[in-house]
Image (tube, rainbow, N blue to C red; front, side, top):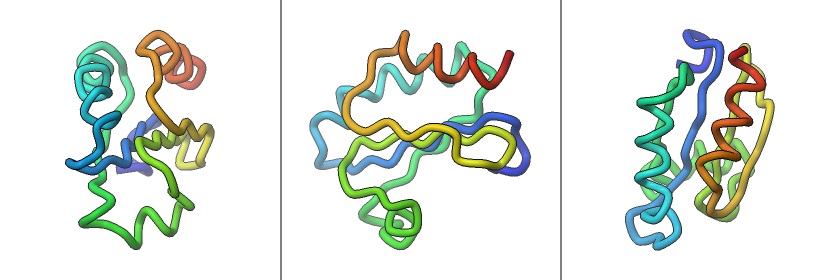
Length: 91
């Protein structure tokens, strides 16, 4: 998907992670409101992917633009900040 879309936001999360659950409505809103593709990755199921991208703390949001890793955000993020980050690469 990273090569299919210009901008992709990958959300590394786990079901047991409280802050990840807090981010859920924000992620859903971004999916509805932006041109970015949103991919959720469960770190328990896809540990090798998390390791490949150096994800150590969750929630971790990796923003890819044109197939390249553009930004890495760790911890709970505000919707406005994420929207701004996505818009930087979609405008």
